[in-house]
Structures are given as structure tokens and as C-alpha cells.
Image 1 (cartoon, rainbow, N blue to C red):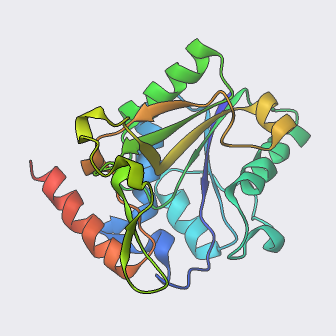
Image 2 (image 1 turned 60 degrees about the vertical axis):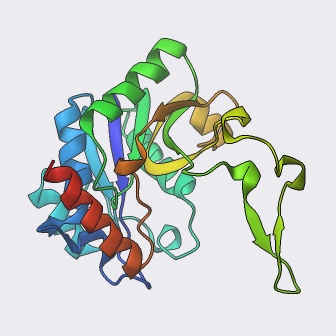
Length: 229
């Protein structure tokens, strides 16, 4: 059995009501639910939430709310891994331990069914513990700068000041969309980022972190541009 777990707690300080706030015409969580459904690789699609309001929206778009997330797993400091573990243990206690679980963030409107399917194929065919979405940095990180205590600029890696961009290794960062996990391995390690993790590489125009109101505006503009192509 494969399950999709969409974490969506009710509290959000920087963007109030973030997980169900309208994004280009519909609640932002709807995009994650619809992508999970369209991928056709899940037996169950659940939303882990502590909010009745989020639960109602999630159900309206086709997700399940088999439980209400405990308060101790619903504050600003709760990492993602314990939330996933809670959901998996809920299934295990009822005799339905999944083989694979995929955490899909609720604020990932760019997530695509085909990339979710690619992640599933990758974790199955390569027999690894985790697979997650990444994208490339737009600028070589070995040429990145910092501001010193004196207010001046300095390179993090000054030895690469004269290195040509094409001679530097490609660097990637977490795209913050989805994380496939082999459940038995995850329950043993509790880790999402495993030593054998493999990537699903996304184009940069489909990746935007949404943590601030400015991020939200940027993401909507990007989304409209991609949609209107």
C-alpha cells in the first residue's frame, strides 16, 4: 500500500491561514491533493491536520482525514519527520502498514503528478530509503558572498574567485515539494534525508519556497506565467 501524507497544521504566523489561503483561485492545499490523485500511485491520500477548517477543505477536494493531529505535533517547532511517523503509526496500529509513504507539502502548488510518479519509480527500482525533489541553484554556490562583521563583502570560498562557472560542480537544493520514503527504513531511522537518498530534479521555474507574503506574491506570478504558456 502507498499513502500520501499532506501535513497541514492550522497555525501560521507569517501567512495567516496559509494552508487553505486562496492561491490563484483555490485553496493552496488543493493543488497538492489534486496532484496526488492525478498521479494514480496512492491507495490513500490523507491530510494530517489539527484544524477542523483545513479538514473540511481537504475533504472537499478528495483527501481523507482519518485522525486529528495531536497538539504536541502541531506547533511552530515540530519537524516534518514526527508528523509523518505519527501518520504511519496510525495505519500500523490498524493493521495497514504501508510499504511506501510520500509526504507532499500543502503549500506546493507547482507539484506535478508526473514528478510524483517519477519519484515512486525511482524509489522502487533503485531500492533506496528516500527520494525527494530538488532543483539547481541559479548561481554557482562556490562563488557566493557573505557580509562580514565590518559590513564588507567577502567570498565564502575565495579559492574559487577565478574559477569559471562551467568548471564548478552543479549544486542542488531541496525543492520543498515531496518526499518518498520506504516505510520500514523510515521507521528504523526516523530520517527523511537518508544516506542513499536519490533525487527527482525539477526545473527552477517550478520551484518557489512560500514562507512570507512576498514569497506568496512571487509564487502566484510564477504560477500564472507557467499556466498561461
